[in-house]
Length: 339
Image (tube, rainbow, N blue to C red; front, side):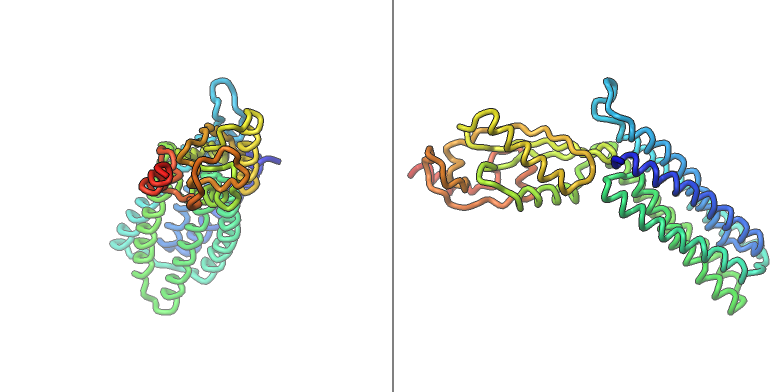
């Protein structure tokens, strides 16, 4: 089973869980008439709808590449996460509205003990599934699955806050605390909705993911071989769980086409072993130049014109630069060539 199919299967379980927990919370609100439990149930409505949107997006993302979509259908995940973020914002607004409105009504809260048991069950299940989804989403580079997992964890946090607040209400009989909890909950949900929406827009706009870039660059640097003289102009674009990596690799100019191709294949294999998602490499090959000698670690080079000075560390700033050997001390390089 590939990563897309695995993500789709997990999302189906999320949909089933979301529907079940929504029914439980709705029943808990019916028993207690607690506005904070109602707020929690409203947030669960978003879980249900967003879960099915995420399910459809993962179904689309799992489709193979075709003539009309040469890079695959992975962008559907970002759209799903964006819709989910917007729905969370709406849910937060509804929670705030209902909480403020209940301040003037003073609706009595009843059967809190039974309600607490029910929402407590939903909190435990949400947290277990949410943690699992976030872990799988990060491992499989699935924005939609990770968003669903974070949504479940947010739901858990909000439910725990509701439980703590209602315990205080149960002990103190200060029923206005119920409305205060709902207001705080609404604000937190709006904030988290904004973060999910922001991440989805970043994916749609192909914004650089510095976390993934740093990890890929570190893997390349840790496994460097003498024939990999320099890497620059590196770009990583995410299409759902797929990663498209473009860059320029400097190799000794005298390598044959077959030998240079082998170096790119080895580089792709090393990076691919650390990422379960499907990776596509588009690595442009650059021949080494005279000034490359000062940073080249190849000891068996028969055409070396200058001595080796130092090995350049590969970091985000320099590897992303489009300039050849941009991290190199130009004064040092010039001195080497002058000699």
